[in-house]
Length: 254
Image 1 (tube, one colour):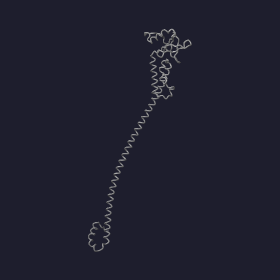
Image 2 (image 1 turned 60 degrees about the vertical axis):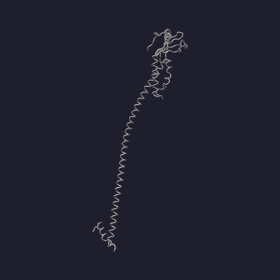
Image 3 (image 1 turned 90 degrees about the vertical axis):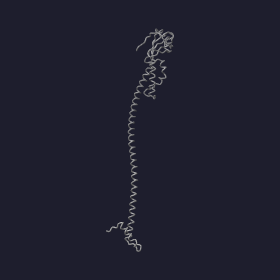
Image 4 (image 1 turned 180 degrees about the vertical axis):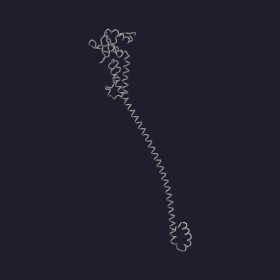
């Protein structure tokens, strides 16, 4: 097989140029020109394809880089979200633990305030009428049912402790009060002297006297007319009508 190169074709074209001017070109020359033209076009197409491939590769590489950055960003966000989720779970667990502790503390406080309110009611029942009257603004705030009330725990604590504090103060005081006693079947006005929350004395204008102590159903009174002079003397001292001095009176110790 005879192989015709591009150089040979070119030389043949030049050698036959003058002769071609006078006579018609032979068939092989026409075929050579067609082959050369196809070769040139083929090379042009190959060069164009290479250029297009290089441009396409650069575009693809740029897109790959963009995608890689996007993937890295998404992975970073996923990692961050995972960490945040773990933090949220930890905080939720801590919050649940705190809520459980708060609920337990609230239940303990509720039991304590129920006990305080019960103690306050019991002492109020044994308190003298003047002390009860003085504590009425506080005692009226005690819930009717300690187990079922809408009053807040802090308010209940404050109220119960306030009552107990006032009762503690009253237990160290001497209180005078004008009251009525049933003497000889009729109500008689007397002046009573309460010594704290455990002992009291009274005397009437006619010299009737008695001693009182708190009982299960309120204060219980007994006649003791022999104490009239001494109770009157104490009242005069309290009114600054007599000099302060020791006045002996009987005291019943339970």
